[in-house]
Amino acid sequence: MKSFPSLLAASSAVLLSTAAHATTLAFWDVWADDTDSSIAADFTFGAFEASISYDESRINTGFGSNDTTFGTLAGPASTAGGALLVRGLAGYTVELNLTNNTTSAYQIDTLNFDFSARSGGDGTSFTGFDIVYTSGSLGATETLVGSATGVPVGGNLVDSSDFDFDLSTNLADTILGVGESALFTVTFRDNIHAYSDSGNNVSAIFDNVAFTGTSVVPEPSSFALLSGCLALGAVMIRRRR
Image 1 (cartoon, rainbow, N blue to C red):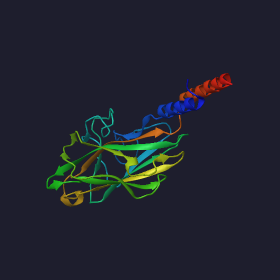
Image 2: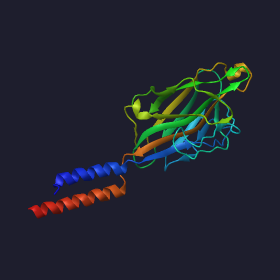
Image 3: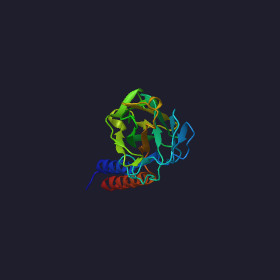
Image 4: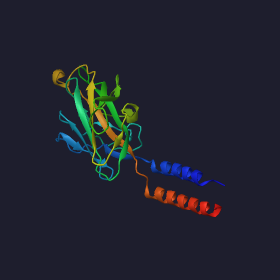
């Protein structure tokens, strides 16, 4: 028969395993606002807030990724056509902000998105990018969390390249507490011709963006299970005495 400490250890293991359920915290896939410089997420989980800010104007019809996923994260993401077209000089940036206004801390697990370069009359646009944790509550700022180069050129509405970045790979702290925020900057690079110099509609497609996370507070059902195990252990101890 298991001793009380063994039961406690077993119940704790169950508690941890039942509490870890990855959740999509925010995503952008429709891009309905075509004039704003800051776009709220099309979906946020609970009281999370999320926005994407950028400098250049955006075209939201006839462009985008049509593979229904956020990176490789299962969707369904919109295939109707709609994407953030990033265009301009080398070093063009997009900022992604995520704020936890829920009542629980969350581990921020992944950043997922689709991306493809586009070709104009005399060259291609951005074919690479760097993602940097810029500011917020996730530890050391200006930390590189992901990058890519040589991203293939695609058309207007295509199966763009999928990107999934595990934030824990490069961030020592991925816990976003109650009321805390995190800002990530995506800097696009490796363009052959800048939009403003080429005279052509040279741009890159940034679409189907999502953050996932995991609550670090156990679910109520897990607390109930732990309480039951503790009560059973107490009964067993009394009987042995």
